[in-house]
Length: 102
Image (tube, rainbow, N blue to C red; front, side, top):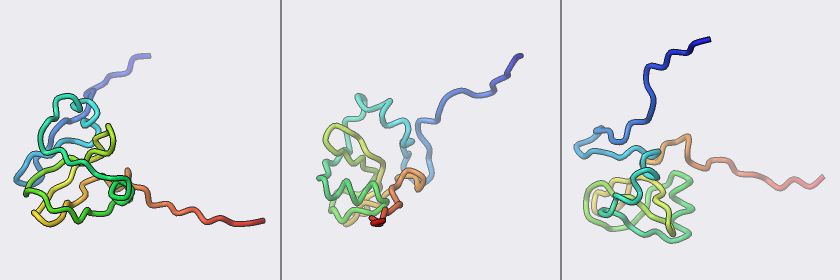
């Protein structure tokens, strides 16, 4: 049985706004090449970020890459006062578990 494959791979960069945006999945591939526009975030900011929240951090305008410990954890865009979360919705943590006692 033969399977024809038309396309293999992922896109690395898209241009949805005025600035090019690195694909979330490409971050780990390009981790060693990315050296600019990286911002360190703490544990609380990381927890909010992975839940899809924007960060109230004043940074230069433009595309930024939040870093937590040794990991690049997404793409954001700053307006100077806030960093807007561009993490894909399917990658955010939305589930809240309740502790039911039986």
